[in-house]
Amino acid sequence: MIREHEQQSASGQTLIETLVAVFMLVTGVTAALSLAIYALSSSTNITRQIIAAGLAREGVEAVKSMRDSNWLREVLQSNNCYNFLSSQPNQDSCYQNWLGKNGATNYYCINPSTGAGNNCNGNSNSFPYYIGFDPASPNYWVFARDSSNYGMNYDPANSTNKGFYNEDGVTDCLNATSEFCRSITLTKLSPAPYNQDGDVSAELYVQSQVWWISKPCPRVHLFIEAPTGCRLELDTYLTNWKNY
Image (cartoon, rainbow, N blue to C red; front, side, top):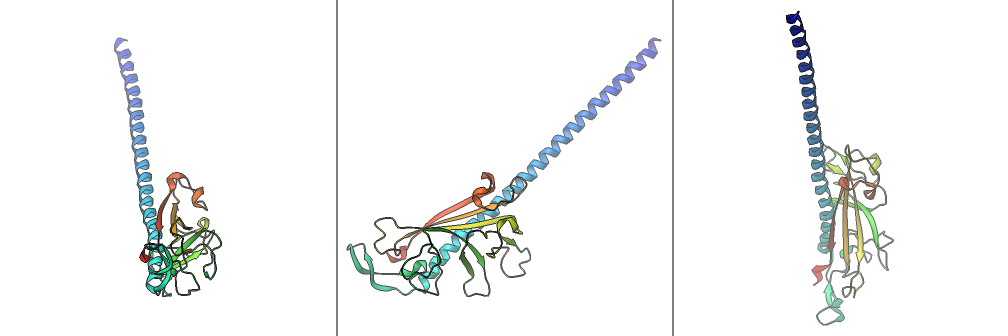
């Protein structure tokens, strides 16, 4: 009887030990899988942040390139601008069309406001734009005022010669094929004393905003609607420093 009782106790102990071992094994595997999933999610989000930073930087550099192109195509206007050394008007030469205005048709329009002789299509001091690519045009960058179409398309094969990410100006973020959206807002500033000649010496405030879509980042239409951890912005100020 004693031996039979000892055998039953031993069998009971073995079952409990097995259950405990299985529980510990499941707990360990679950923790490992959770850690792996978290690491993969973090890695994916970091990758998107890196791509978004590149797209935002591209937006800033595109506007700089347009400003520089306006300078290269412009003719230096003699004695038509304010001279800050002598504090006299019409005593200095400058590039007045650096924002693409005064009736010029072959310059990039990066002035968001209207004015006398201004061929730009803005109607306020601040307005969002989108940039895209157009290889068929002499101007590689396509830059247009827009209020909603910030969706980007992804072309992994580069089959249309438009680059990996392209804004076509007709796709909004909710219907975009890629996981990134971008909006560029230009604001014209005229801080004293550099507003002697109207827009000639104005500052251009550039905001390049990018937001992305992932598991913790829902697809939204506007930058401000995206969660804080799902968006980034690069800002810069452009001036007509070539005049001085």
